[in-house]
Amino acid sequence: MFSDQEIKPYVMKHIFLIALAIVAFSACSDSDDEFEGDRDRLEGYWSLTDITGGIAGTGYEASFDHLQFNDDDRYALMVHDAVIQEGKYILRKEDEQLFILFTPVSTNNIFFHDFEKRVVFGDQDTTLVLSDPCCDLYVYSFEKEGK
Image (cartoon, rainbow, N blue to C red; front, side, top):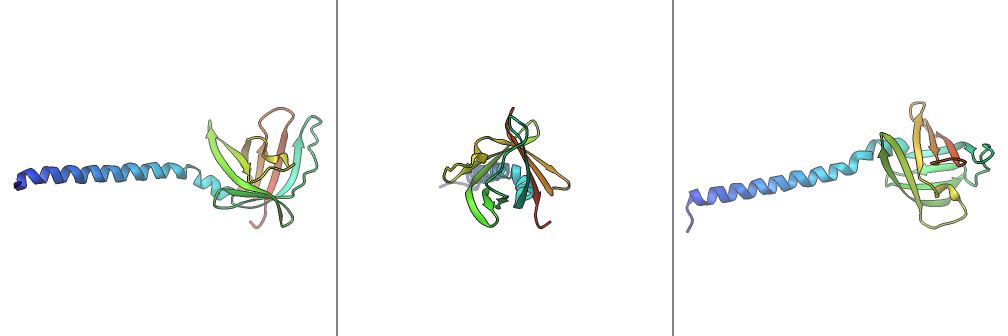
């Protein structure tokens, strides 16, 4: 059969490869946590305080008054406690700036999700501003409830 001198390098090589695979796999799963802190900051119930922008700069009358973020990358637009739109959101960063894209479960006449929005936190994470990407679009301001 095989001698100890022949088996040891074979076993050591496989142990090394298994350990390397475990480290590589855990490194890949850590990259999913890139936005964990941002998700924690978003999570909760946000009250809509203002909408500005648009062609006249005066915003518009929204059909929702709250935005809720859950810990499973889900959101809901609400009127009081009634959900009028829900879905998933995706975060991304570009040049250290955070962006969010809303994807509703079903489409309706609420155009809040039409564009990716820039995310800005303020006042120790108790205020949130979501800005549409360009000219003549809207800026949504929120205050966090329960903090």
